[in-house]
Amino acid sequence: MNFLGNLIWLIFGGLATSIGYFLGGVVMMATIIGIPFGFQMIKIGSLCLWPFGRTFQVDKGELPGCLFTLLNILWFFIAGLWIALTHVLFGFLLFITIIGIPWGLQHFKLAGFAISPFGRKVDIIG
Picture 1 (tube, rainbow, N blue to C red):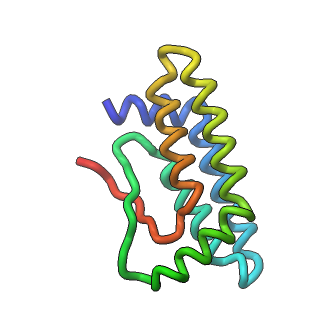
Picture 2: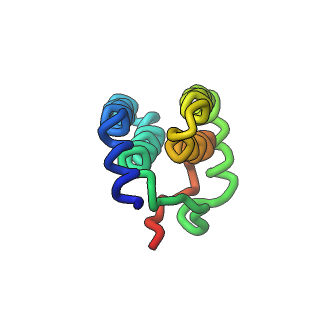
């Protein structure tokens, strides 16, 4: 079932959205200051490419917690709020139709990840 959901997601916008995230990540990496933010855009793009059967969790151990917090605050104001609002909007639009509910849930998952991506890693379930 995850394969079918991912295939439909990919055909109807997932590929275009993930390419946008990948290109945005590459552009953000053009400056030294933007490199950590570019990596987060690429991480969101990989989750957006194949979202069904994948989740994210807090990763304890790479950087100190206060650095995660500082980077997440900067991320929130630079890109996180706007990315999350876009995913919430698309999630609500998909929830209007009964058939679009599973894809709307994926947009809500992506919105939660877009708010604070630093300190989280993407895992494959099952």
